[in-house]
Image (cartoon, rainbow, N blue to C red; front, top):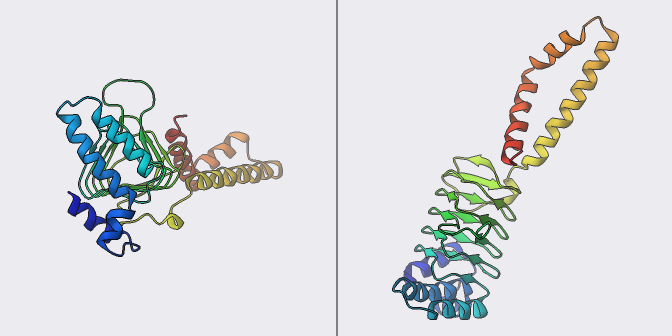
Length: 241
């Protein structure tokens, strides 16, 4: 696993110069080495020592990984300061995690209470993935997002709360934030256009013989109105409203 982790760093980080530099200057790799040992001791039932190793690792690297968390191979924690991974979290193979990420719970519930990440997932800086939720394979989570619901594979998620903004990103190994849709701005624009349309309709009503009922039917049959209705409903549904 160590060799796989090292290869992943060289593949994903252009700043990686040589093996010695990566071994001694990459806290993400060091935290994983500490975690592999702590997790093995945790599985065989050794008390205290796994948590103490995790505590030392956090002091040295700024990355907190509970010994009970299950981490796959080829995982790369880039920079890593402030990363927190909870006890029942499961991180799949070749996942890329940036600084400030939290894979945590939503309360004091028992049992499986932390997220499960599939393979080849990218979690942007400062993102929070909370609760016993499933994140599919090849998912991209934007920086600063808060994900509280299951996410299907091959999608991009951004925002608070996190919403799917793109699907079928099968060939993407990174998350280009400059190309991510601004869903909130799109919905606000749709509402703004709807208000302008209503104002125009009422102006026409004042100048024509259309009844309010006929005017309402005309607005309902407008394809643009139907499209914006769907966008707004999806947005509000994602917010739990």
